[in-house]
Length: 496
Image 1 (cartoon, one colour):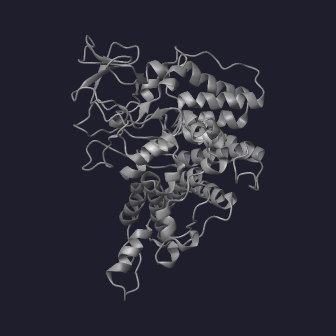
Image 2 (cartoon, helix red, strand yellow):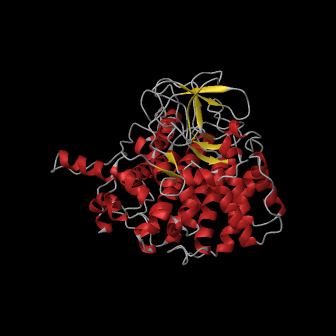
Image 3 (cartoon, rainbow, N blue to C red):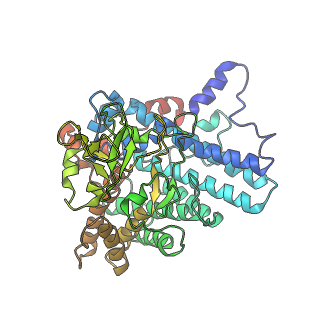
């Protein structure tokens, strides 16, 4: 965003930059306004932003590693080479595109109130913009801690030099208030809208935000101890808003079968509260997805087949790039009966749709057992409709359980998730600390490969338990937050 402003300046040094948006002939109709909202959503689909969901949400944890010839930047994230983080291109892109999304959302928030069309549409578009601003700040705060605060659209060069948030209260209060605003403006639609937010998505994000701050404060993560609200108050708020998702609507809910959650042909399934919008019919990557290829090993360069759970059914897939490689220690940590291992991680592939011939298996010629949550049997070459799962109903159910503690309702939610995976009930009669720790562990397996693990580790202040962090001898000051990229510091005078 800052680079764009400077580029405009460089075209004519005698001319003052006009800014990003020409609004005189825009926002005249509902179609114009929806185009602006779609533009704000579009920031999520930048390749450098969407792939980073996994590069910083899972790879620095114990879940996945990367291949030996991956880019140096991603290898550094994987092995915690913090000395290189300020110039790490993956972190720089994530930071930049989050602010692109914020600026686009701010443009909608500024202009929609003055539009002259149906109020219900204005409310919808405004609600989505508030949600997107909250979503992007949610990601920034969890990774970078204090970041610059942009409350309005950047239109002049001076506005690019916003200072850091004064404290955690400032950044998280904006996230909380934006989510509440979004929830007040958005309806619950009769069926989920692919790639778009609704009231339930806003309530879910608000629950996740309150749980993050509550547990970060409770576990003494730096900067969170000075937040105004107590951990108990924030746990209560997380439980309340997660509870509204669980009991306050009938559009979303649990899927009975694990494979149904990840069925690419059912993007409006009950589990899918907020999905990234990608479809194999798109013209360029970002419009279509290659997420599946990032998880799958290179096998033979041809079509492979995967068994569908316990059914005698085999579905086709392409092979892949082997960028997100399952850590073997994590794979071995699953209970042997856990269907999230046996059904959602492939340890063998077949050469035909009848499953008569195994073409590769682990251990053996398959280099690692791979996540198969992202499989599109209707792939077209490299194009798939596999979409990152940004908010899922089971995630919100576990948010409720952790926040509420060992109530009957919380136990029932966790036990449903465990029983669906083929496991028995959680140990009864746990105290609140032991129960929350058990839910934290359950999230490890339920949310695996969905870009969520590192955030649980961060808010529980357990980064120091990661083996690479131990090997590097890192201090709390070095690993708690990623540094703001040096390129952004160079462009923003208030950060120097």
